[in-house]
Image 1 (cartoon, rainbow, N blue to C red):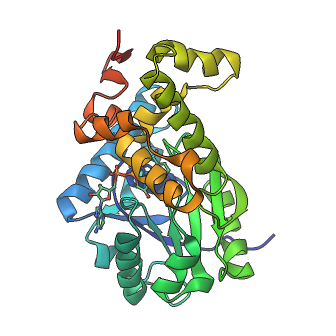
Image 2: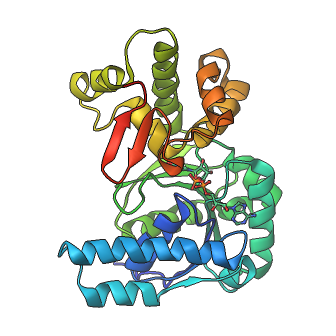
Length: 294
Ligand code: NAD
């Protein structure tokens, strides 16, 4: 068996996805650096990992020693320090091409000469990102799912210029962090987002049309199709702003079926972004989630 590559991982963006991705990498034994717009925001992401690990220890699912060792491998630093000598850079910044190009171009100046540039984008073109970063052969989509420590799938996205070697190294990385990969050709929305946001947007349109209440639309898919979570609750979990950004991109690329529903735009304007703001299609508290429409 090939020797495991001793990666040094830089995760750029410590939000919903980034802190979870950093946890997964540190738990797998890799030195992991977490960065965000500044060090305090990165440190807040690391603190969330600390809380998650403490909960696991409390439930007897992780030893205190393993939790301490994981935290010892996880540093909150600035982006340049995170990328210094990194062998894989995973960006988990907001869904904006310009921002991702800037972040990874800067990362490329500090990272290892053979570093992989992985984007957690849900929909944007890996082909364009790789070309604009100036390393198309080493750029790949590494689409994790929410929450990263729990979700098994890693959707690897192959850009036009992505090399076979990069795919092989990414597959080995996926195995090392305990994920099950699929390799998908770069096309807007890949496999998962294209199908996922389609159902999510249709559920919101059904709500607009008064077809059913929040809980009933969600139950339709949970009980009728065995989805573990209904589309409206899943939208809340992902973040309605994130969902809107994906739909806007897919609407532009793939057409009418992805037009963002007016209700979704209105909720984002109102700051009702779902779980992260405590209010979306559900009201989120420590006690759980209750449908906003009673
Ligand atoms: P988020 O808004 O929760 O987190 C984004 C983080 O990036 C924030 O902490 C923000 O401060 C930080 N950031 C902004 N500008 C930055 C910069 N210049 N340098 C470093 N950090 C910066 O968003 P998220 O939900 O974690 O999404 C991140 C990416 O992951 C997006 O591309 C999204 O499409 C994708 N994604 C999201 C989900 C999900 O369920 N939320 C699932 C899969 C993929």
